[in-house]
Structure formats: C-alpha cells, structure tokens
Length: 270
Image (cartoon, rainbow, N blue to C red):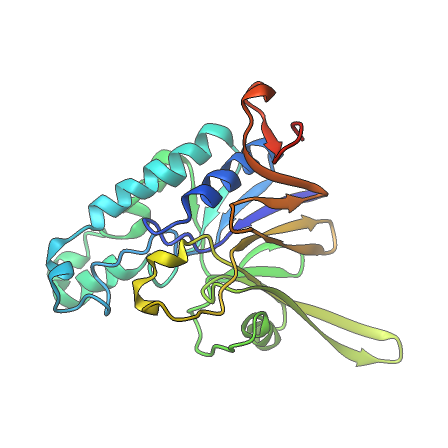
C-alpha cells in the first residue's frame, strides 16, 4: 500500500506560513511514497491581469517570488524528504511564461521564465508532470484550469471533470476541499469514480482580489492510500491554527521535547 500526499495551491508568497510549515514537517515525519504539488505553487502576481497597467506590473517580482518559493517550500521539503516529488503547472505558475510569450515573443524561446527553470527543479530533484498525471490506479491529477467549467459547490467541479474523463480526478484550482463520488451501473454492478478538490494552503487575508469579501475556500490537502487496483482518497482539513488530523493524531508545531520529531499538537511524537 502506497501513501501519497497531495499538497494544494500554496500561492507563494501568499502562503499560510504556519500551515505550510506544519504540512512540510508532517511529510518529513510521515515519509510518504510520493508527494504531489498540484499546481499554483507560486502566485506570480506581477505578470497577471490583476496588476496589468499598474505600478505593481513594473515593479517586477518574478525572480523574488521564485527565490521565496525555493526557500520556503523546496528547500525545507528536501531537507526532510528525499522521495519522489512531482509538480503540476497551475495557471498562476504559467504567468511569467505566458507574459513573456505575449509581450516579448522573441525572447520566449529561451524558456528562462518557465516555472520549472525559475524554481530549479533539476537542482532540487523534483519533476514537472503533465496534466492527467496517473499517480494511482484509476486516478489522475490535474491542476484544474486545463479545461473550462467551474461549479460553486465544493467537489462538483472535479466530479464533472472526472465524468468527462472517465477516470477519478484529483485537482486544485478551486481552493475547495471535498470528495464527490458518482456511481453508474445496475444490478449490483456499479462503477464509482471520484472528483477530489484538494483545498488550498493560502493565507486568505493576502488574497487582495477578494476585496475582503467571502470566498467558498477550504484550507487543506489530500492523502491517498494506493493499492494494486485502486486508491482511497482522504481530505485533510487544516484548521485556522495550522493544525490537522491524520490517522487519529492531531499534528501541529514541532515540540522541543521530542528530539526534533514532528509531534501531534499537545501530545507525543507520532
């Protein structure tokens, strides 16, 4: 049985720092068989439609935000985990590449502003994977922006994409956390496929485009137990204090009296 952790939209440098730190420490303690970052690892706000024509567009920030993502995600993750790390390109991750293609096409062929280059994937031993990445029997991972269509109910966007693809889908993009199954068949012969939206790890207070309004977003990440013939998905909600429960233990901050082990909040090391 393989254990796979799917880390949701982090939107760096707008990540929830406490939640992000706890999830990385959890990965170090849990040592899953694979880690998938499902896209929008970096927000890259400067080359976006939200800043077009404003002062922010001309301040740059692409290299600064890339360095932040390396320091705050890739470096600490690799310090505690040397297993497979696979990353999808989200619609925010592709902003520098698309901005260059649109505004300086003569330079775009250099690939210098592809996010896997900006974040030095080769140096960190991580891999960019393509949409519909098959990570477990009967399951594929996408970021979620690859095809049109969003549903305001958590889980239903992924369910619609799963129905269209004919396979269970894990996705990010919506910042929602939900598993939505759908079964087909009769006479005791049913086939069930799942749509799984794996939440987000963003600090919502930094999402200026929300303008202080409500958002149907849920902080969290995904966990899979994958066997020979299928996989069981689990949605892991992350609370406001950055803690979360996995396999009956609440995980939180590093406890100094555990000899450096990651410990459940207020308890002993798992």
